[in-house]
Image 1 (tube, rainbow, N blue to C red):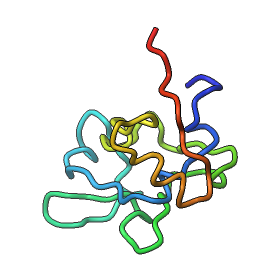
Image 2: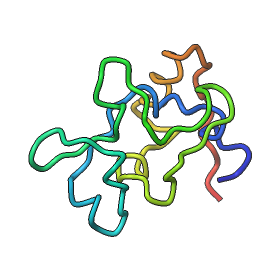
Image 3: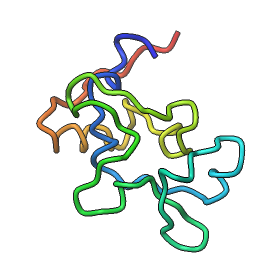
Length: 111
């Protein structure tokens, strides 16, 4: 990740959304650590801490809005891999606003 990546100083999505995914991700290519997950139903898992009223992913290190990182970045589940800071639907900005962070306004220019 580059230093201009807002995800290195935000982390709001990790403390705002439930991170749920297919149970096979704890055994497949991603190998999400099973000890950091909890079952939602027979086919879905969630990262611990995200399936509650005041979510915060167990893998989030640091304080939201400060210097943050994911302790399992290379083994993060698919919702985290697919989440876009500059998404068209505004999920990132909803999380940022909930933590008093300014919304992201300009999408990065593709190289």
